[in-house]
Length: 339
Image (cartoon, rainbow, N blue to C red; front, side, top):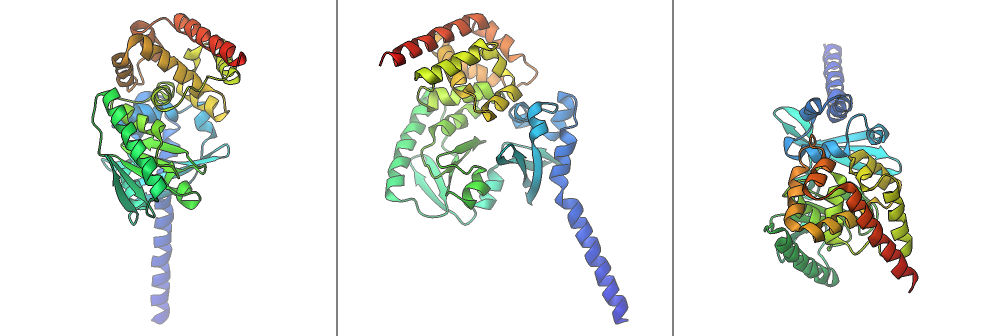
């Protein structure tokens, strides 16, 4: 009798382990199904509709980039989860959530971040809520006050109030890798109403992303162009950087990098596409105004819209833009070389 009971429990244990093994790969299985899709309509079944363009633009099935991304593990917390993927020397994670009984990719990482930081401290500085594993020191709090002023500046620039986002401050090491998916100090990422950063409380670039996301996101060139335009210093000021950006324009113009996988791949290869995007958006903003830029952010949410055609119809012809950018860069080279 005892032997039968023991065998029964061994059988139950084996079945439980089998079930756990099958469930452990549910997100990776969804990912593997997604990368086999052939059309935009098929892809929509695997992505949160609210953030479709942003995610589809980054991990578009059939692109060179997605073929380089290898899923290595996954975690599930209630109705939220994530898979870790390896690309080149980078390891990052993609968020999932359960929507109508299906797991879909999403930019809304808030539930995951709350789970990962459930025992962390919340500190209110101005209109920004910081979340950290230990109290922020006096020097860091002063930097946070400066950041709060930047938040007020961008609120006026974009014409909206956005005070309900959290800023996750992670320390170098396991915290940084687990929460941010980055290992370098001062790096950061922004998702839907959440900033994640490594040992910095003043990541203005990511703050711009938070504001821009309220209008729309989806094209990395436009998203990063806006973020660097309003959140970074001039990235093509030196002669060397200006020449590198000029080389990108001579290679098929800025429009080449409106293709999302091309932009992301070029950035992975350490090309100066962020500086090119910054220069392009800054030029268009100064010539056509902020309203046009906000309209562009809204339009890019639809991946079926030809974004170059939209820019040419609502701003100007690509050749005119490229010529203007060349002139700016040549002046930068000339001024920098004469110093």
